[in-house]
Length: 445
Ligand code: UDX
Image (cartoon, rainbow, N blue to C red; front, side):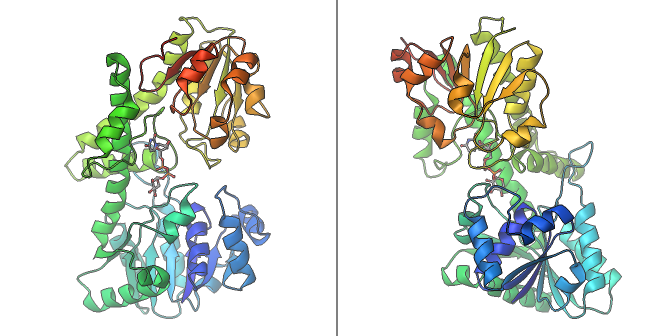
């Protein structure tokens, strides 16, 4: 199949590279000249393990190319994917669809033969219908079949999520039997290796596909927000959230995934998608109290971390040194969007604390996002050196290897707060720490 992928961002690049790896001939259209130059140079503008190798081998095999010229990419394509950004619109939480509709218009103008047009961006319910309307209005002389194919890619895990997905969801226009059959056949072809592996495919209405994406993300976000509340309750009651979640997860109706307590969810998807879903539900006249509560509970949690650190410092933190390990919203990414470290740093600076921060991948972005007395350190060890309080926010693997004895020898103080519960509390306590972990009453000395 000949595929045009409009948008060389996170979703576009991962999907384009993987479709090429599946055997299609893919042209990724990127209009940002700086990004395009990088891609043509085989440099990957995002941090995603093994994506560089997939891009390189498919470019070499002549199956993957990058261009700024949408017209040439669409001309001769069998399927066009729209994978442009849908940021939150100012005020109200709605997704901004300007780029999606602009892409639809450009695709229509460029089309020379019948096309399957597929939205891959996360879009509100009804967007597929509007894309179809725009395409047909712009070019009544061309036949377009419009599908919706939401992605469920986790940053840092995107390649496996794409190549070994739990399911592939494809929304088609069920009222147009012939068009739906054409779209279904094309999608089975671009996803041929997954069809062969018996991956569950769900061909549903476009509206169901669009809502399924938001509903899945919101449900996972709700699980995280719920377990975080139970973590607070565990701390107050003497329970241990790891044990509580372990017991809950064995119930197959609940499942053991997304039950890890932490400092609140961040990233480019959960915060944006929960806000968008809340806005969609409000507009539809059926407000989602659960989704709204998930957003509020998570905002509260992110703001509360710094208050907790202040309390651990005895209510006075001005001039004290806080070591922060892990700044990105989760490990194996350089993404700082909506990361809990941002309100933590902002609030600690307001209290007058001095911060020594380290993150394996996120510091370049973090530097441009905070101003004040934050020193970004070259290693975790440097961040810990001379600190009064050590706080772990993101569970990078390297941090698991830190030796309690070394950590305590490097610190000036002895207070540790492990917001991901990755360390052995007893070992740190034995080494002299006053040790606190998320979701557990303080480890007794
Ligand atoms: C998410 C969805 O998982 C993915 O399907 C969707 O397409 C995009 O959004 P991503 O944002 O990359 O992926 O990260 P994910 O691994 O889902 O984590 C989201 C946030 O929840 C992170 O801040 C993470 O630290 C937090 N989280 C996740 C927890 O605190 N506890 C958990 O148990 C799981």
